[in-house]
Length: 417
Image (tube, rainbow, N blue to C red; front, side, top):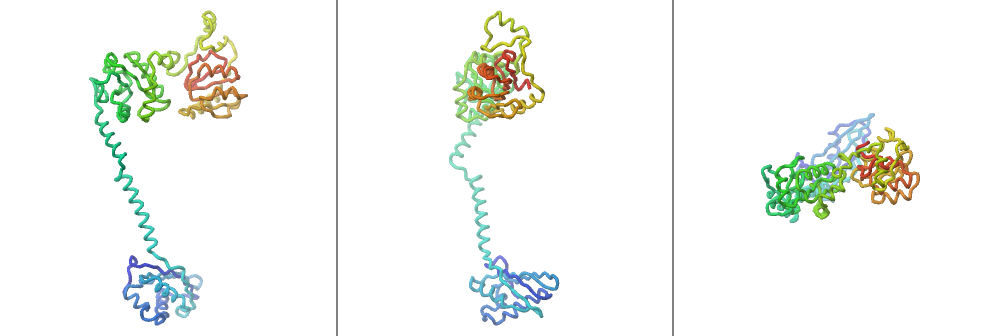
């Protein structure tokens, strides 16, 4: 008896069967062929349709429970819709199988081409996505890739220290000194061809020699490490200008706009020595150095205290910071790194609110019962004056430009915590 391959079927007839007795699979198939014989005419005779391959192998699954049989019947068909529907309806006329009463009900006729179409659509989407991602870059991507490759090829080693550098070191009167090779590549990507890298923490002799002949701008990462590199360069080379990446960012992470903004905002070495605590000498690696207990008497002889901050006489009461408070302050400070924000706290160290540090002074003047402020920035004299005026007990910043014992407000930095 011929049978049809499942892949050539267009429709699947799904039926359920209930039998009041125990029968076997061959009994069900025999009843289907026997009781439909001659019912639909010679053209729709099931045996002939199966022999010609237009009806596939009839699958019967029987489950026997408590003396009754239940199961399913699956019939593949490559006939058209009308003929398949007639075959399905003919199944329901079967009322007995063997000696037992039976009932067959058609559940559905499934058009398997729909599921094939869905499969085709999903696979086509996957192929198109892969094609667009990997093999069909747009013109801008192609241009960027070519330009980047060319600029990477332009990087060279310069001097006896073999420092990574752009191609225009000898031709340029002004050079940009960066920390590493990745920074040089980033500047090359944005068409800065006069960059040269230190390639380490110590200053190479090549940089010292170049500083005597050319104008050098130091461009470092926005962290304490960058401050230390600036300090070392100023000590051993003739640096002209200084600039830094935004706080918490590295030069290699910057966009073209950020690089241009940083270079336009460069400052002279003299101004850098006054503005950067590590260079000014007020701090050591960002940790404020405490003054001696007799400094108040020395200031009385010399005149008004620096930064117009009230000095605290020897023996004056200061806020005591417990170890638990220090732990909480440290955790909050770590959460704020890179956000340029500030937490305003009450006596129980509950956060009353979070504000940008640009609005901190104005916010403190309008609030009451503030115990402490933790913020992502340096402690400045104007903020200390606001804290004294509003009776704030503690200021906790990333660094400090104020003497730690120059105020009755407790001034702490992350390094102190």
